[in-house]
Image (cartoon, rainbow, N blue to C red; front, side, top):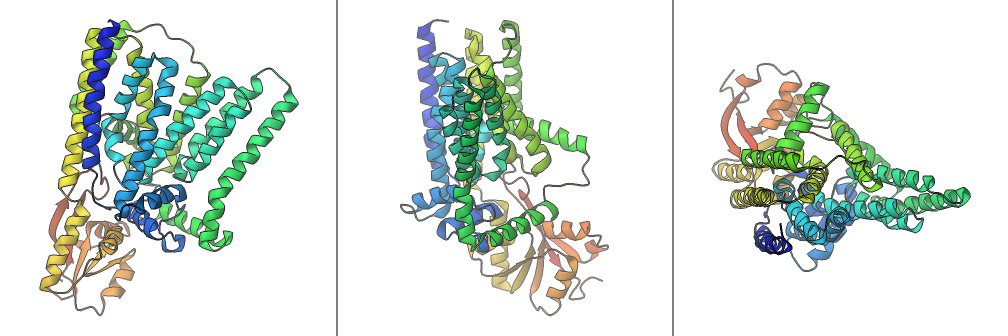
Length: 492
């Protein structure tokens, strides 16, 4: 392969990626289809932890970025999406510099464009969610930490420590990546030099770490009214998050079932392949071609070790402390795996491998465009139910009992009554004197069944199911509406 061929390949990839990126901007979905997205959007309008605008831990840097864009754009959802996009564009530099440490300049540019074309991360980060901004800052953090473990100097650690504070103020669940700081200290202490000076340097780093994290935590405490109130909000949120329906802990799921779903479904089928058999096949071909032409295994240096530690720490955090029903939590793992794979694939290039890599690139972009086009043109299931209930309410007043959907209905300012309900006893008490038609979503019905309520099927009547893109709405991609028929004696 000549340098001339590499130049032509680079220009072709750059042109296709640029067109895709412009189209991706056009396809930003105009929806706040989940509880979290509504919390973020309301936070842009008025930041208030007590009102869950947004919910704990507040995501202050993410919301602040949305507020800055909101000065110029009225739509809070679009403001957050554009803020994510701005940060994602900025993260091209640290990704290129990371690739540049292991590949030549032109190969590093191509690998960077390939990584940013990965279909699952590029589609998931168009939502008004904190993941888009967090992924971008994570790349800056990993690059600066990678630089620090190679330089092994006191000053090199300042930037990653400050970036870690920004990262935590955007998405606290990325705390597992803080382990990288510990690895830097390990490498720093092993370096020859004055031991007492090293201890002083680490003490300085610790103080800087505490102060930088304290900036956003103190701002949250001020917003909540006091540190005590902030802690109450924190404990209240985490208790509900881990114990209510659909929370992180799944006692009925065995460990190996959870592990299998986490690795093969979330990371593999969703994260790397975006539910596309074509991408699976082309990826296997890349492994086959690379295996035939690959070099010998060499011991990883401190930079690679850091990235492997970062991957491993978040892998276990995601496995044990995140809701595996929401595959978007594995976005950092999919991207780091993509980085490792592309670094290996791009080291030795042949004409055959360039053709296969080009097909891999086109398949990812084609999958992204297909998913984004479908989601942009067809509203989420929760929006479809909102329209359905609005039409029904024009005929006869109704009330809808929901789980998380009620947050979206409130944001949409729907004209009918709706309530979030947690227990069957609470539901029966609430409907005792109502004269309205009563509807329930399947999340509520399933919750009642989990509480051991028998003969529920005799008291409800299935009305209609609504569907949307599963990749974007893994939990609420299908919402089934039921009518309560027991109260009026229609079915005993």
